[in-house]
Image (cartoon, rainbow, N blue to C red; front, side, top):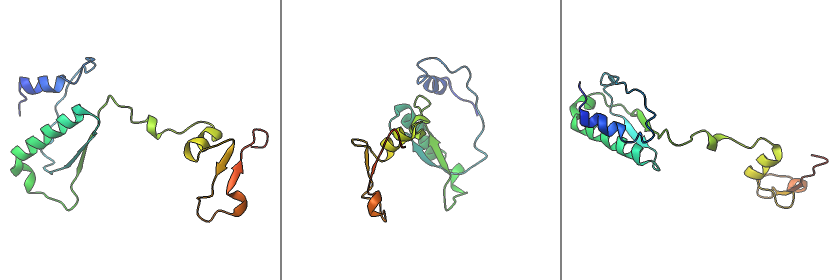
Length: 131
């Protein structure tokens, strides 16, 4: 279980800003399950890592074959350069949230496509004084 210098170099190449202070190796071969590998499509580094992991699993096939499960474990590879939190955030004010989620046009919100909405609620007018 020794990693070659070329493998260390290939791991260090994506660290363009030299922010990695330490690389630790943990033994994962005790799990002995063949994962389904998913990676972030927009990241070339994540794609390369996923391909390398897939190659190792293919090369060491006999290590992973004996414990096949109905639902394979998932190995999710994300690029740390991308911000995963911002898309999960919503606006801080109600008006901004309504505009983002429903859309506001001339202070009016069109709810006519909402199933089962009452006739008087199909269009709502926002007012800074009353809302």
